[in-house]
Image (cartoon, rainbow, N blue to C red):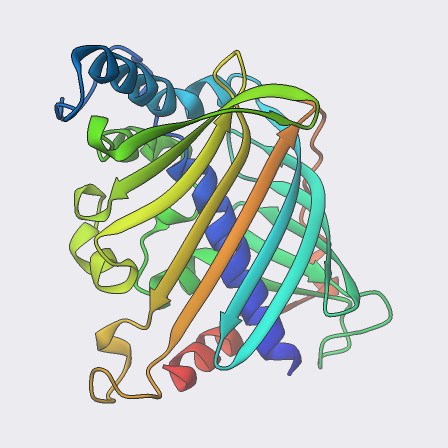
Length: 290
């Protein structure tokens, strides 16, 4: 059971870190609007929609300028008939994706770090089978097994690719809302998965669109983001007939909230002699369940 929970935690963290980039939508220029799809409403609505698209696409660059932030995460994960709900808080390096967090899930408090796309977890009072207090999982390898590229784990250099996947017809302004005492503008965003790097394979797992919601402050920075995913097992990873009841599906809803921009982040890997590498166990569990 510990391995299954750990693997699920790795998938959650991979998706959470990746969703920061997915919401990025900024290519650094802030001037081009890809696609130019016309709104079916009046000209004024079309102009407003184009402005909203520009703001959403520029959000990552503007948020990244702060270099770091404090964040909270609420996650709901359902897979193989089981549901995991977790809450986390900590700090995030917006340039590298490194983070230091405390996660509470299944009545356990987990000390967690992500350093160079490697997840480290420590449950107080528990050790890995090797007797070491920390376990680690290579998120890049896990994503590869799930059929997702490294770009879904949080490589800030790839934000331009996501920006190009969003057009005027993909962004809808919901209204203004207060988030953590800050006035924000709420947008619904639908990313065309086929336009992302590796989009053909991703479409088989995520479907044609990736639904997100973002709340931007007056400086255009992310204050809150919600992403809802249904991930199907890659066809190549399963010999079972398509559509069989045993086919693997992972449903996940993640809400992240950002504050205290510019806060200090000290994300360091634990000493190697205190860490047990559980990446292979996570990959084996993924293959068995698919």
